[in-house]
Image 1 (cartoon, rainbow, N blue to C red):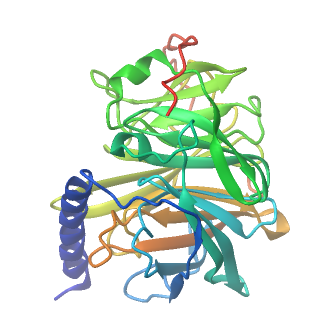
Image 2 (cartoon, rainbow, N blue to C red):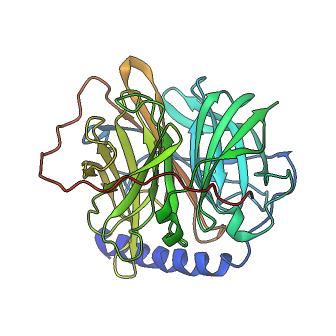
Length: 372
C-alpha cells in the first residue's frame, strides 16, 4: 500500500476516534481532586514526517524534535493549553477536564528528551472548591502573565461556560480565581465553541492586552471572532477563515506578532493542523486579519489533535514554538504529542496585503461571568 494511502486511512481512523472520543467523554471526564507528583514517560519522535524522512526545515520553522507522552495516572490527558515561564524549560499545561500540570521539559542537546518533576492538580472554583460540573471545567488556553510557576499569575480561558479568569500561584500551586475579565456581548452566542485561543500580548502597539479567539464562527457569522481586552474592556476583531479550520490556541511573540494554531478533521481526509502568523501592526480593534501560513500538516506528519501552543525565547534571537495535543483521554487510540520547532528571529514577518476591509463595531464592557 502506498504511503499516501496509508496516511489517508490512518487519518480517517483518527478522525473517527476524535469524534467518537469527544462525544463519549463530553458526559464525564476524569476529575482531579488533589495535587500529586506523577511520572511522565516520553518516547522520542525523531522525524516530523511519519515515514522517517530526516527533514530539517519547514519553511521558516526548523524541526527540533517531538515526544509522545504517557503516564499511568488516569487523569493525565486532554491537554489543551500550554505556557512556559522565564526560566525557559519549566511549563504549565491545562486540560479540558479542569486540571493543571507543571514540569520541566528536558533536552538532549537541542532535542526535547523528556518531562521531569511533573505535578498535577485541580483548577479551582472561585470559592476554592473543585469545579465539579463538566461545563465549568472545560479549560482551553493558559498564559503566564506575571512571575513564575512558584509565585506568579495565570490567565485561564474556558469554553462552554465561557470566561477568562486570573489565577494567582503560591508555592507552585494555582489558587482559586481572583477575578474574571469582562465578558463580551457576543459570548452569549458562543455555546461550545468559545474562548479556545488566548494569550497576553508581549509587545507591539497593544502590549499588555489580552487576546482571545473563538474556536469557530459565532452562530450566524462566517468568520472567527476575536477580542482584545484593553484596559479591561473587550474590543472585537475578526480572523478571516482559511479552509474551514477551527482555532485551538494563540501565542504572542515578543514583538507583538501573533501565532494562531488551528485544527480541522474530516471523515474523508483525517486530521490536519496549521500554524498562522499575524503581523503586530495588523492586529487591532475593528480589524479583519488574515495572516500567513507558517506550517500546514496532515496525517502524513506526526500530529494528533493539536490544541496547545506556547512560544519562548531561544538562542541567537530565535523563538521556540511548542505544541501539545489533546488525546480526549482515549489513551489507546490517540496520543499526547509534544512538538517543537525554532522560528528564526531575524527575519521580519511578511507584510499582509492591504485591503479596504470594513471595520467592526467595538465590543463594549459587559457584566463578568458568574463566579465559578
